[in-house]
Image 1: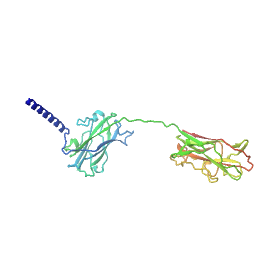
Image 2: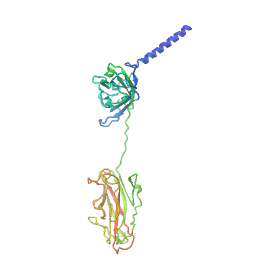
Image 3: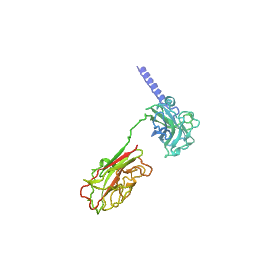
Image 4: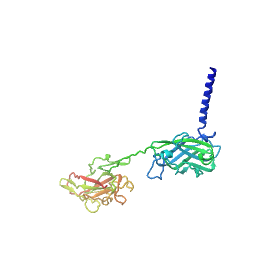
Length: 389
């Protein structure tokens, strides 16, 4: 019985020794002083030089790889080489991504790096598929230079969607990386994955937003047609041969039409039964005249009388292109020809364009002679905004 127990203990010792041997052979060039790079990361970046656009994780895409890692301490030996081994597996079996998943690192170049790493350049003698950077002078970082940033440009991702792969970063005591004669200083694995590109689509239809009212207000700085008030506009003073009566209405417009919009005016004149107040017709706008029957309008800010405001937001030739037409854009002068274009989106003189929403203020004036028959005078005006797509 005692002999049998001894045999059991002997067998267990052999098994434990076997496990110890397996753990020792994990790395073929391991060093007792080798440390773990931590923290460490790999960011797949889109390459701005590639057309059409390929996202950083696009399967089969040509992208940039940004490695960031921190050494555990100042190494005892200078760093002569940094290798990047691309693997299918995180362990030593690694696998050949180039063969199995059409990945390629052979055409890489070095992009931006930490300022103190400029001595590292691609290993000219390296025949491996995996990138190796050498500094033949050797580099020993200071305590402020332990965090590395290295960008490899022109890496071709594995051509498989939603596929995880690994890169083993290793610092060496001699040039050539794994193919060199040096030993490992520090190392660590990082992981990355390709992903399916998401195609997001939506449609912007042909658009025209146009409204009229006594007033139109802005919401968060944007003209908002839902705020348009009652379209019934009253003169706040009585008509008189000794003073010009005036009032305003507003309208807002925007369109994505390539050649913008034009606003035309229809309606009038002011009537009370069979009595009328004459429209200010003609080929050019005119100054109001007291004691004369006349009804006119313009779309600018005036001082005589003090009525109206400028277009808001102000036209800038970038996003905003609203303007009154020439005959309706002269301060203190008014006109009314039915069918006239009174406004458009041609600000800047380069032709009508699509424009963000803006508010026009229309100023109306009335003068009457002393014998103008009494009554309530009304006119129904229609503004039509026509976009051209």
